[in-house]
Amino acid sequence: MPPDDSIPQLAQRLQQFADARDWGPFHSPKNLASALIVEAGELLEHFQWMTEAQSRSLEADKKQAVAYEMADVLLYLVQLSSALGVDLMAAAREKMAINESRYPVDQARGSSRKYDELG
Image (cartoon, rainbow, N blue to C red; front, side, top):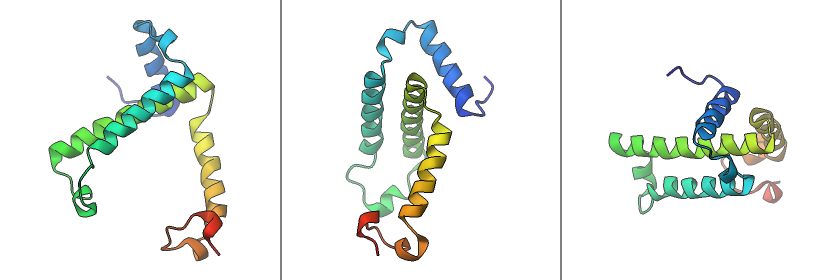
């Protein structure tokens, strides 16, 4: 199986996977967003009860399980972007530009405060 080098290529493979199984009726934006949250919860579950230090140094088997949960989150996010016709990379670039203006380096460095609390 060749690697997917881009989000559009991954989206196409996901669409082919879903089409082959006739899952289209189940892949409404609402259902995909719900599935995304479920998978994000499963990702978080791996870190439940860990200290911050433990979360930074996962054992190999735990790290692999976390990687698979991260992949599930990504896959549902890509499917949701396809269902809504959102260019995910363009949206990410735009959001980064917004964040850069909301969190100027000189005000945000070393702070966990929200943008409306800076200054």
